[in-house]
Length: 231
Image (cartoon, rainbow, N blue to C red; front, side, top):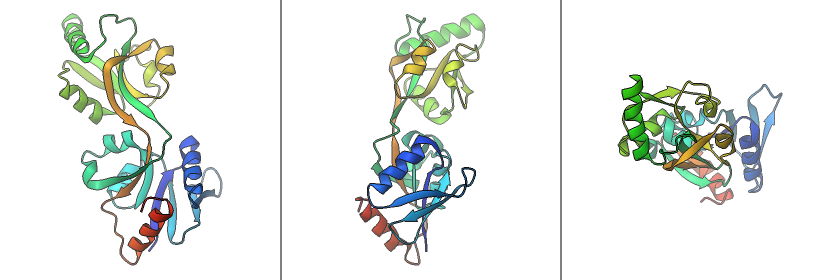
């Protein structure tokens, strides 16, 4: 049987993943046009390349339709509630590093910690009769983080793009988003809470704990991991 390897289908994540595998003797390539999501693997037999969005790879690993996949720590933790039972981290790839953080307007000079945010949320509700809105696409991770830190009186607002702009646009009062350099946050007059780090993320190679490996698939997987230096 073929071992199925899932890789992000475009952009720097795809390019850097291809480079990481090539440095270890496994050449991944995209075949066909840019609109086709077909790929090829050279350097080892019986391995198939599956090109998907990074956000789809956690689901496919958890369903056992991929044996290995490259995606961010943030996406695994957000999309798979019981991720430890479904996937194992094989290797951090040392690129795609970013932090999931809580950020508030820089003008909130009295809000620097989660306790401050909790107090501000309570005051906001008393004043405006509604919960303070936090824009994010990481609902599960943010909700659990705020629950653990005792923050209440907030509402999560879904944002699938340009999250940093939601405060300036008036659709949220704070955000929880991924940042690498922090430049976009600063450009939108936002600051990260001093204790607002939710998760450190980077591109990682994951192995499915539920994917079937009969008909020699386990041997192929073992050879591939050995060639990648992850035996």
